[in-house]
Length: 439
Ligand SMILES: Cc1cc2nc3c(=O)[nH]c(=O)nc-3n(C[C@H](O)[C@H](O)[C@H](O)COP(=O)(O)OP(=O)(O)OC[C@H]3O[C@@H](n4cnc5c(N)ncnc54)[C@H](O)[C@@H]3O)c2cc1C
Image 1: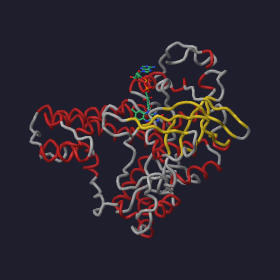
Image 2 (image 1 turned 90 degrees about the horizontal axis):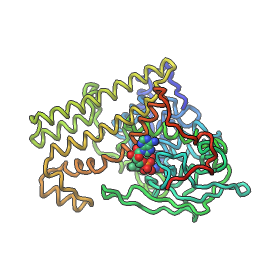
Image 3 (image 1 turned 45 degrees about the vertical axis):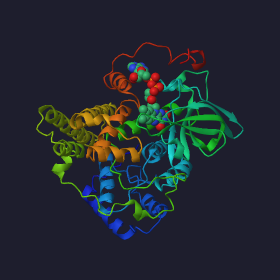
Image 4 (image 1 turned 45 degrees about the horizontal axis):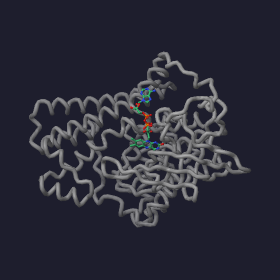
């Protein structure tokens, strides 16, 4: 994505402009839809998007500050979700002006929610091995196949779909990228329950689902390049911890939030802005240090050691962010940084899991999967933070898998950033149709 970092406009001036804009426009009595329309069209919902694609061309670090400022002001944040995180920047990079108008506008204004239809039962790490077929029928594309792990598919209006358009060329060369309308008879979304007790994922069955030719993003058989753009945004976005969202409604037509009052999604106490010292220690360190103190475990040497490791991880992430910002300001880039950030996030979440469980001790074996159960656990233990600790521990396995597993990140760093030799195989030259298929 284009990073238009205008060095003549200081960060302070941008935040001043935002504050003035918020003073003039924020009104808690607006509907969610009306507020997001104002925020999105002014370029504040997704300021990282290029100017001309409903953004302001700001670097990620500045976009995070914009989100924090909106919350600190006491206004409702931008529409969260995979549309804003992945689909909008991908379409801004690869789409036509018409596609930007058709798809990016309803994302930044929260009108449509998106999901990612990439993984299949036989194609996860080996994503280019996907077998969902797309065939042309007049001006339309027809899709048949199965996707899996579709996060938030149950509340999505549109899906980022990759499907095979040319089976008789090498596998990376025969894939195309589409925007698929999820509201049609050929799309069936079935929930999958996770170990957390939630059903965030789904299996998605496509049986002669349709999309117009205008929904093809980036051209026929160019889907691998487009999908890699999405994956790069996923890794860098998730690796940086996304952005400071917090107080916001759920976008899209299915969640039913658009007609509600925006002010009802905002905490009555605006988020206090932290001092730069507190920011550098990292919000997570503060939470876990507080948890250790509250549970009388802050003098335990092993817990103190892990708290310091958490602090160090936070600092390394912050300094890497600064390094990347400075490199980009000079027109350069750091190869593999998105992968390094994502690996680092997996490490942080695993450490949070272990540290949290060490702090709460045997109580960590108690978890309420439903809110009524959790209430009973909280009352029985007298520990109001226990649910957050056990919930974090149960979810901690996810970041090392989604958006490409830890092992896949390491392969990419080895091959693309360090220039190490690839594993020998013929999948860059042999036709996909001639390759042995995954089970
Ligand atoms: C919380 C969560 C949300 C997700 N959301 C979505 C979503 O919204 N949309 C979507 O499309 N997908 C989603 N996924 C799927 C995710 O992208 C895949 O699970 C992931 O890419 C791994 O694929 P797989 O599960 O098929 O595992 P496999 O690819 O079968 O991997 C199994 C194991 O083998 C290892 N392995 C595989 N290949 C190699 C290799 N070449 N070198 C070394 N090790 C290797 C892996 O690291 C892993 O440990 C989600 C997953 C999770 C956990």
